[in-house]
Length: 170
Image (cartoon, rainbow, N blue to C red; front, side, top):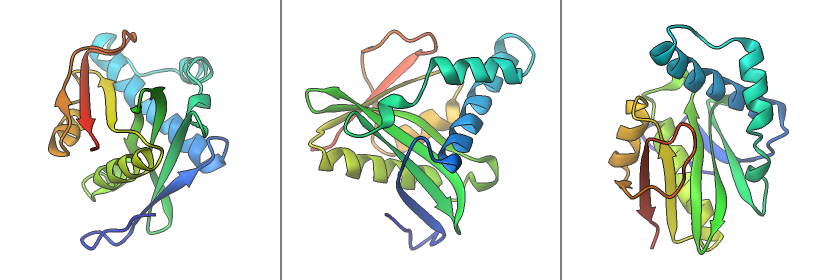
């Protein structure tokens, strides 16, 4: 677990993907990123059926040890954020599902999530963290750059991967 002197309300700890609070955060994450995509490209929000299909198709099973990890961030005890990583191999992990609920954005949650992910990944022997994201997710991209992530060549070809970042942990 981590805490902050500036924002003592944040605590980040591993959680089970199946935990109800984790499932709710993962759903909120999907609604947030899917709505942003659909509003930008289709002029509408996601339907609940679309979110259900996408959650089923992109399960978080790869965020279960030993293949990965899901972290839950709490602000003053309330489930407020999540982040995960999956082990890709060769001491590399992939950061995924970084999300802070709207009411807690700007309170240091993203920083706490990244620190916790990097600490947990290092403990598993990882020496590099990589991620892919979309160009329109400007806040996330700014967070990654502020915390030492630099643009790298594409390592994946996901439907929504438009830019790739990496950070050395050694």
